[in-house]
Amino acid sequence: MGKDALAEHLGVKLLEVKPGYAKATINITKELLNGAGVTHGGTIFSLADVVFAAASNSHGPLALALDVSIHYLKTTREGATLTATATEDNLTRKTGLYRMEIKDENDKLIAIAEGLVYRIDK
Amino acid sequence: MGKDALAEHLGVKLLEVKPGYAKATINITKELLNGAGVTHGGTIFSLADVVFAAASNSHGPLALALDVSIHYLKTTREGATLTATATEDNLTRKTGLYRMEIKDENDKLIAIAEGLVYRIDK
Amino acid sequence: MGKDALAEHLGVKLLEVKPGYAKATINITKELLNGAGVTHGGTIFSLADVVFAAASNSHGPLALALDVSIHYLKTTREGATLTATATEDNLTRKTGLYRMEIKDENDKLIAIAEGLVYRIDK
Amino acid sequence: MGKDALAEHLGVKLLEVKPGYAKATINITKELLNGAGVTHGGTIFSLADVVFAAASNSHGPLALALDVSIHYLKTTREGATLTATATEDNLTRKTGLYRMEIKDENDKLIAIAEGLVYRIDK
Image (cartoon, rainbow over all chains, first blue to last red; front, side):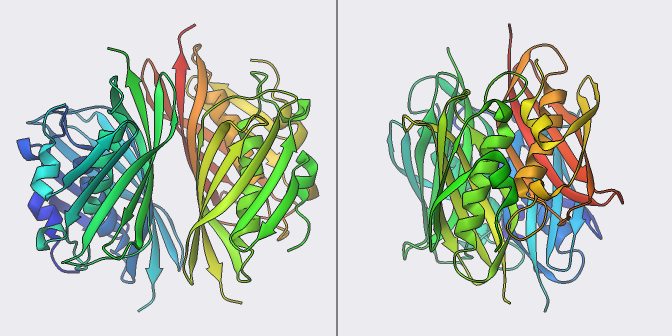
């Protein structure tokens, strides 16, 4: 995998990757807000997607995302620091299922997501 | 609603908003790719989220996203032009359900998403 | 495919199957309610699942469900007649994506579901 | 809440309910299979739905399901014993989010589901 350009464009920093696991963080700047002045759903999803991709590609075979569902639990604002982790719920030869938790700097849950990948034997 | 800062940061252009409907477009530039060199899941989701927010807030009461699920159908690359529409599947006094379709410049489906909002009587 | 035993046990009648499409109906009897006296979420899901399975297996290769998400829009009661349709949102060599709509006897939407299958080349 | 009629019709036994938690079990009989001869998706979902309803209604205010997404991980057959638990991911005055895990008699994960309720102040 090359560098994740969107992650860089948004300021997502990947902190840790190990088999079936990844952790990343982002500081919420003005550019990452929505029209209501709170952190954009697309920002939170993108942070989750970065750890989802890192964790699901940690085993070798290329992992392509099939679907992701995200539940938003709490709004955050400019200045917040969000951290996301991806953990592996299930792994088969062909698929992987990951749970992403996004928390704020006070360790409060901001969102939960679940994502499925298809794994391609190279 | 004020301006959508993330939409601007990514280059999403909102083309049309009417009650229960919105349409937006984005040109896929280098900054919007992932580590595999294809359009980032977070880019596609953010485009869908912009029309979701616009359509769900088109009726007056403030709409807060509860959850979104997205299915990815086809990868795209730098230079692609994606267009997203949000249409209203259901509207009650308290909730709204929206379907988002993301297509490429050849009108091929790239992703489908479904999002639920909670509506706040002001 | 053999007969669908759960469909029979619940009283689901499959009305129509064609490539990428299926339709079924159920009469809501006392056994199909939940503890609040309204139609059980499991009843509505099972009805949706029957048309999902029929539509996704209409092409030949065995289709195995990977995931389904369902949104409930309206409660119904004993005596209601529900009808579900499955239509194909996308079909690739390896996957199929289906949208299920469940309506009551007045053609009001009761629930919407989206389901993904993995297709096995026999 | 009265008795759960569908749970009884399918043979789901509720084993435990405490605030934000519920556990139930089912023996997979012939009536609970699908056309491919394996446990029906509707059976697994219904089992998950029973613990979801019990856990989300454990606090007092009536909880109405808004949506559920389920991922299927492993097929099971006649004679299997499945157990489902619901745990609370989040609780606000208006909503509750629950994770359901369904396992077989060997403690292998069969399915994972995530469900959201709207809570009605009586």
